[in-house]
Length: 149
Image (cartoon, rainbow, N blue to C red; front, side, top):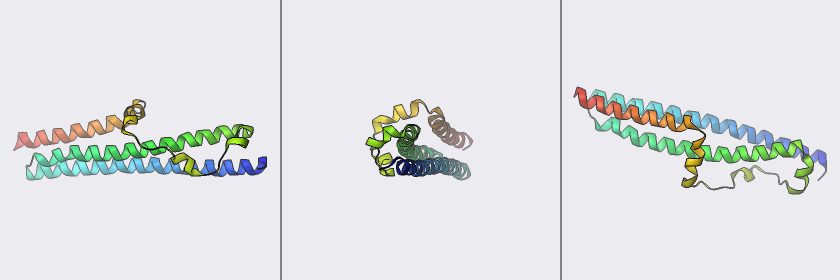
């Protein structure tokens, strides 16, 4: 494969990877929106019906959506790793000449493992703080219903 063709392939894949990263960012933001909306609705229903159990369901909702976001985050990190690899190839195409294989599938080769969650979240306090805050809001909503009932 000649140098010019290699660089075109690298640029094409890099562009696709950047679009995929943007899509995962949008999906993660949408998941956060769904979580806030659902937990807020459960708290409102709990207050309206004076049922303490309804806001507590929000804890399970928070866990479900947090798990969804963590899975998307894991996939996004794989795409970012591949993007960084392609970026390094673009800076030194001689490295890529012998080892590069075209295709976004290389960004999705790993499997999701629960044991990777702590290391993933270690540098992303915004993720776990968001879901901890919503869990607290759900618990406080249930406590509020219990107090005013």
